[in-house]
Amino acid sequence: MVTYAAPLEDIRFGLYDLWDYEARVAALPGYEDASRDVVDAVLEEAAKLCVNELLPLNRSGDEEGCRFENGIVRTPSGFKEAYRTFADGGWCGLSCDPAYGGQGLPKTLQFIVEELICSTNLSFGTYPGLSHGAYNALALHGTDAQKALYLPKLVDGSWSGTMCLTEPQCGTDLGLIRTRAVPNGAAGPDGSPAYRITGTKIFISAGEHDLTENILHLVLAKLPDAPPGTKGISLFLVPKFLVRPDGTPGPRNGVACGAIEHKMGIKASSTCVMNFEDAEGYLVGRPHGGMRAMFTMMNTARLAVGLQGLGLAETAYQSAVAYARERLQGRALRGPRAPDKPADPILVHPDVRRMLLTMRATIEGTRALALWIGTEVDIAERHPDPARRQAADDLVALMTPIIKAYGTDMGFEATNLGVQVFGGHGYIREHGMEQLVRDARIAQLYEGTNGIQALDLVGRKLPRHMGRLLRRFFHPVLAFIEDHQGEAELAEFVLPLAKAFGRLQQATAWVAQQGLRDPEEAGAAASDYLRLFALVALAYMWALSAKTVLKVPQEERSAFHHAKLATARFYMARVLPQTSSLFAAIHAGAKPIMALEENWF
Ligand SMILES: Cc1cc2nc3c(=O)[nH]c(=O)nc-3n(C[C@H](O)[C@H](O)[C@H](O)COP(=O)(O)OP(=O)(O)OC[C@H]3O[C@@H](n4cnc5c(N)ncnc54)[C@H](O)[C@@H]3O)c2cc1C
Image 1 (cartoon, rainbow, N blue to C red):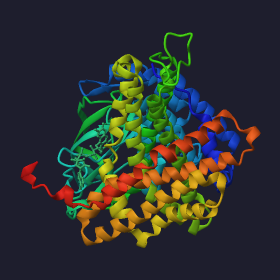
Image 2: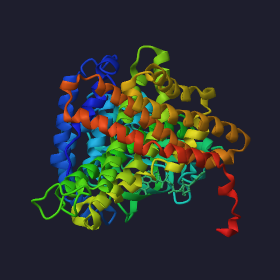
Image 3: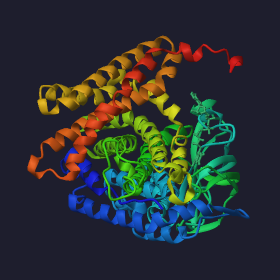
Image 4: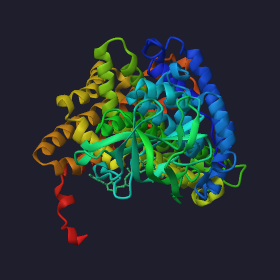
């Protein structure tokens, strides 16, 4: 069984001390009630829910998995009850619009709660997670009538949602979609024109299950007059049960689950083949505007997937620390630490500490980064000054692929280190550590593989508006370095940051120049560049964290503060130097990658 308690002290540090939640988020219009007290109370409740309801189902859910019986998908024992508790507690609508029954709390808080859910039961989290994606798509692109009809059901959790993009012949390349939508001449319950949708979607998370009375599928399909490629994709809402104008579910629609996948991890999350046969659906947004609609919604979804990596890594870290305190093997290199015992706890060994600190430093750094970007999501939505909103939106757009890819790579690496700390016992199922690795693996793949995130960063985000997005990150980092480079107490944090930031600036210029000359150069550099960027972003987080702790008078510093400073030092000294090798790899260019003839592979 894994060890987990919600890391509320670190979350509060990031939220209040580092990112000044009260001034930056609670002061935004509409968030007046989301005071620190309210946030603290919500976090306490979320922690209880996750630890008491979701965590106990994590391993049994993995063992039992979902079952497919005559077109019906049954979730593992206990999931229905836990989902009811979750929905009844209002968690499906935490950050949703009060006009549709939501609690209207900040997105920042939603992100934090998502981390806790993913730490305790990622499989469970996929069901409300997908519903939230559907909520966002409809809230952003639906008509008023569509919103009025469907959103309250997603908010109260009585219905759930899906995102149906993938088909057998198309995953990354959605331009290859074959699912068709033909106008059927009638009108849907919300008055919008109805279509007949036909096609097969695969890998659809939460496509079919027994948790809710209806499922709203958001489906990408092509209209008869669609231009080729991604410009010809439209978004449709296809309910499992057709909805009557009064909002009650009616007869079954022409959509059914054909099978569920048997997979490496998140076994309690149903991954479905969905067959649409003349299913009735309604256009969401404009004809051929499906990719745009999906992208606006995918940004929040990508941030949320980054948090999946973070959440699982946290559980792996806490479990590994607990184990390293208990497990007695060998003696400390400088002499026994527990002479009364047959051996010392493995926590004394430098190599075990290296693993634990690598986990901790990357987890806390990623959390600080996610909290920054989470608060900027709220600012982008609510700040009264349009220029500030734009700046926040730019930063979120820039950092989204970084949080998604780095957060999930880090999640996989940290859970893997967790197994290593457990030794052979980590490989044995009963400890729960191997499940964390298996569950973490998917997050590097879905919502756009991490390779595709890197291409998004290099190909779309860097050049956009002549580098304007990039400046939203570069300027504050540069200002921080300039403001603090003369301060002796901060030198051990600011100097390595400045050096790594210099590498990032040079690598950025190289990627931009080479990429303009030859797009293959940009493609070859992309993943290493994203990693370099992420490591510098985390260095900025650690330098800010150190500065924040150093402001606390010596005599008032707690163990938490001391550990923060020590972990910041570890990050700068033992993790950040990886930027050197990434820098060298980027500058080696595409040639060593592209030199092999295809038939030499
Ligand atoms: C458990 C699970 C749940 C999922 N849930 C959903 C869901 O709810 N809804 C949904 O629609 N889909 C879902 N998916 C699908 C998922 O989003 C896709 O698997 C993913 O986008 C990758 O597509 P693919 O598997 O077809 O891989 P491919 O696109 O075939 O990619 C294969 C490899 O090639 C690389 N590659 C592809 N194109 C390029 C390129 N242009 N440049 C560089 N590299 C490239 C990729 O990075 C990858 O490494 C889910 C998948 C799984 C396994």
